[in-house]
Amino acid sequence: MDSFEELTNQLNEMSDDERRGKIEELQVDCVCPICPTYNNCAKDTGENIFCLKGKSNCVKKEKGCMCPTCPFAAEFKIGVIYNFYCMRGLETDQRKL
Image (cartoon, rainbow, N blue to C red; front, side, top):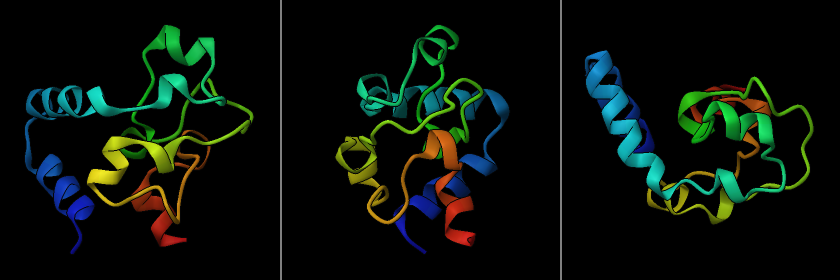
C-alpha cells in the first residue's frame, strides 16, 4: 500500500466533518487554481484537489495539466502516471482502469 492509498483509507475512516477538515488542510498545497485547465466556474464553486474529490462539474476541456508539479501530488507520489483528475476522476479510480 502506498502513501496515497494510506491517506484515502484514513479519510474513509473519518467522520464527514473530520474528512472535510483534513481535505481543507491538504488543499493548501493544491495547484489546481493555477492550472491552464482550471476555469472560472471551478473557481467560483471552490472546486480543487480533484485527485481526492473527483471530477469537476465545471471543467469540460483539457488545456494542460499541473498535477505532476503539485506539492500534494509529490508528497503522496501521484500525478506522474495519472493526471487530469478534474476530467478523468480520482487517482484511485484511474488506477483501476
